[in-house]
Amino acid sequence: MMTNKVKFSTNLDDIFDHLHNNPELSWEEIETTHYIKSFLESYGCKVQTFEDCTGVVADIGQGSPVVGLRADMDALWQEVNGGFRPNHSCGHDAHMTIVLGVFLDLIKDRDKLQGTVRFIFQPAEEKGTGALKMIEHGVVDDVDYLYGMHLRPVQELSDGEFAPGISHGAASFVKGVIQGEDAHGARPHLNTNAIQVGAELVQAINSMNFDPLVPHSMKVTSFHSGGENTNIIPGNATFTIDIRAQNNDLMEEMMEQLEKTIHFLSERHTIFLNTELEASMKAAMINEDAQSIIEDAICETLGKQTLRPVMTTTGGDDFHFYTIKRPQLKASMLAIGCNLKPGLHHPQMTFNHGMIPEAVKVLTRVINKTLVAEV
Image (cartoon, rainbow, N blue to C red; front, side, top):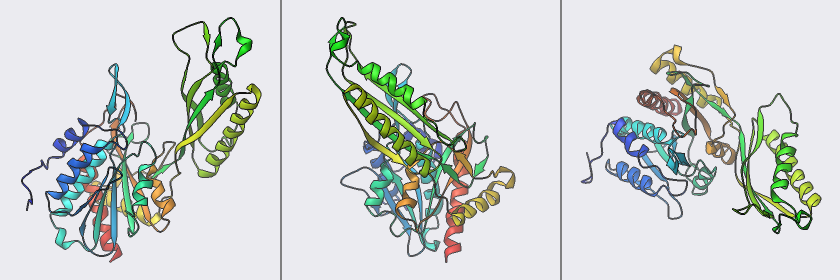
């Protein structure tokens, strides 16, 4: 029975459209938090929000076990049709819709649940720091199983295929500065050209060699230096570096090599060159029990022909901080094949919305099977 005057649509297409058309950046998911909070409260749920960050947590049922289901909330800041704006091009709008769909399925028989189901709507996944904030707030301290999900591009899964785990790689995001002084274009001997230092940094990164049997990459993703005047040699610049590795050991090795390179260039050019780690994500640690439950749920719900093995991707997700920081958690993520094109983070990303209700069915069964298995 509804407990307040606001009535929300229970149609998954309507829910998705609302979330898709109101994207918000990491740590700025204010209206999204309000929408989800109000949606859950309209069904009589006790909802937890936070004074120092966005995000929503709600429980239904009671007692043990505690099974968590997590959705990420934030959108990306990118150029779309000639202008920069928040944009849901990573599927987080679909993830929130799926979790709300599971909530709607389970709330019908909330009194029959043999344990507690915790719905976690997490901010700032794209920054790699949202999961850490939820952990800080103790959101998963008493959770036994934790499940997530992610839409997958056509390069990884075909439409209608599902996998019981996503073996994400580790990722690190580095911000850097070059600080010097400008000089006249006719007097290049009086300063160090920040653009030249940047070019040497790119060349040094491209010359690094790591284990070829482990997928990895390191690349400069932005570099800003100079102004409108062509006769000024810029002494200052800012840059960012994106680093990926399929396991945590290689990530550590790559970060050490980058640190040595930065130190070498700083010494070589007698210039202040500094980097700081903006965020990082750990490689996946998939629990076999959680993986097995998802696998069975896929087969029982959609048929064995839709099941694919645990998939490996070089992308990252801060979901895996939950298991790194709370090793007792049994966790895995559902991979959803949905004809996603051209790819994740593409400004014009599209996917088959018909896979949203299919994912809801699978994850609802996952939750119910986990509750019964742990009784």
